Length: 301
Ligand code: ATP
Ligand code: MG
Image 1: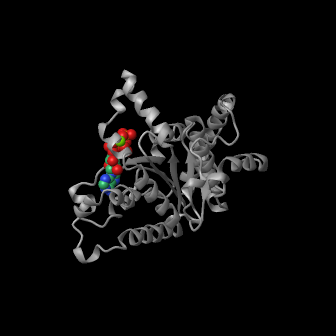
Image 2: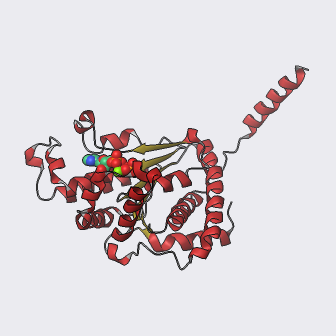
């Protein structure tokens, strides 16, 4: 259990970035360089807080598993070099691997393309009691596919079904899908790591300049950068159409990695705290059974 004071302190890092209603959402209202008023002198404290958060999450995960009622789905979307991988690594560092699975969604396979666009996501959803992490997700279908419409042409949809409203239709379907999941016990949190174009350039240059970071560099990423505005428009439309109380978006400032990680961990703690997770209690009959088992063991001498 976290104290009321701690919960309030955590919420301070979450509230400014949480979007539960899309109607008035504008990406321009969110500053990628925001650090919640903390200067870089706060980095050690932030690291400390993060460590505490991760520790608390490990306990919460254990109860989630024991209860076997809820599942938690964490969706990560971002432009390249926004820090998805590092953030996922940090927030999952204390978790029990048995109760947590990360899926990275790449270009769909031929088999996946032979199904509706939510099929492959469905196959990777977390079971009850588990935490599932989507590194990219079903949202790629209204992001990269929207920016590069030739991908859509490769999806073998009946021509009659591909009209001008296709993106709105897909967004409606995603919203309905997530509502369905939420109604069945999946807690959905969606993170957009909001890096600036300028910071992305700096990180790309770093990847080029530092030999041990060269492997991270993909020439195609620079081409994608050329479509920045189209991506931002697609993200904005996606968040507007799918932000909901039961499936909030978090537009996390991503120009400072230490702050990104803190906000993401805080959002997960905040959401899991509200589930009131607890170990299942046992009834009188079960208690008698345990006592009998104890007696049997003791009788072995
Ligand atoms: P990193 O580069 O950090 O290793 P990544 O997530 O960028 O991680 P890549 O293998 O570089 O991984 O890229 C995966 C690519 O697959 C991305 O360009 C993404 O847009 C693309 N992709 C994911 N889902 C779909 C989809 N449904 N349709 C088309 N392309 C997709
Ligand atoms: Mg990549």
